[in-house]
Image (cartoon, rainbow, N blue to C red):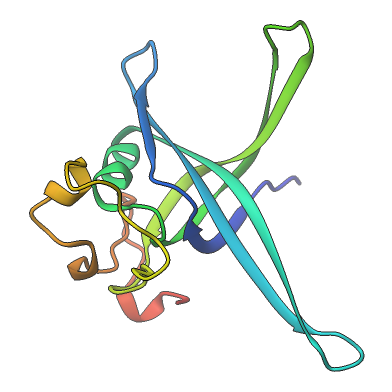
Amino acid sequence: MNLNKVFIIGNLTRDPELRVIPSGAPVVNLGVATNRVWKNQAGEKQTDVQFHSVVAFGKQAETINQYLSKGSMVMIEGRLQTRTWDAQDGTKRSRTEIVAERVQFGPRGAQKESSFGSGSANSPRERDSVPKNDLPAIDINEEEIGSAEDLPF
């Protein structure tokens, strides 16, 4: 039996980047940072930050692009996938990323306004009729997963 499953909870490191692939399907690329904090043997606080590349397709991609921005908290459930291609200089390149199968938005006010800006006043995200901090925590997967009290954050 094999299993390829990833769960991460973190904050977006940049605004989502939406594009359309040749088949016409929307795809969004995200950068998500996760933090780990622990104490070493001397009792000193240690921190580690990991950066993850995430990709989502279809309706999820459109919803992510509409409602999330740099600094937004998000939970991603998905699978690891490694893509390989030949670069323009002839070298082989590869990237391991998380292909999102389920995405949940973090709680309202999870965006760190003081350290993460949302771009210029003319950006589409600022023109949205619903302010980012007034968004509920929602599951954008089409399956029913339970109530908001079941969220791990």
